[in-house]
Image 1 (cartoon, rainbow, N blue to C red):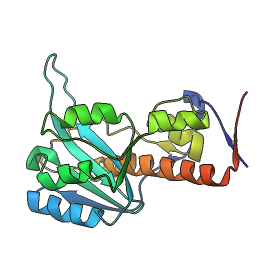
Image 2 (image 1 turned 45 degrees about the horizontal axis):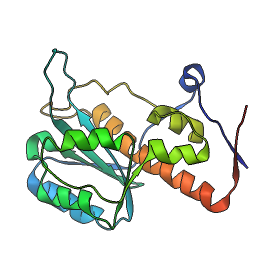
Image 3 (image 1 turned 90 degrees about the vertical axis):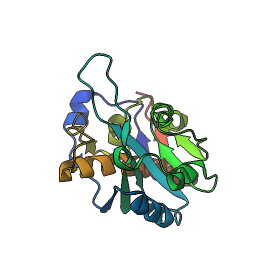
Length: 203
């Protein structure tokens, strides 16, 4: 029986062991590479997605989405949109009703992505809403993951330059972890829903 907490405090979260995506990471930085990546991803029925934008430290300046991450359980593709733009194969994938896309704060991600190209996302699961049916009240990816897995996702690379000529290994691993974690959370909750082997901690 799994006991699901409604929330987790920062002190408890900080004491948890860190987790990183351990699968293969593929970087798509040309339209051709992006098309090949999408062809590969079409084999999955569900994926985790996330995006990264270069932080702005100047008032009034805002950058477009630099990176779109799409992950399976063991492969994560990093689409460098600042180099390729939002290409038609990627748009078609986001619009596909046949592949479930799981993410957190998807409305914000899609709002930013729409600044690159118009599209109509389909078959999307918003984790902030989905976890509420399991009694989880926290809304951050870090906290939701901590509640379900007793592990901590690092946020150390969040404010790094996502438009750098080359992404560093820590950047790649961080970006992949966020997309993979969304899928991992959804898979865990789907399994608990199937088995009913959980209860909500009311304390």
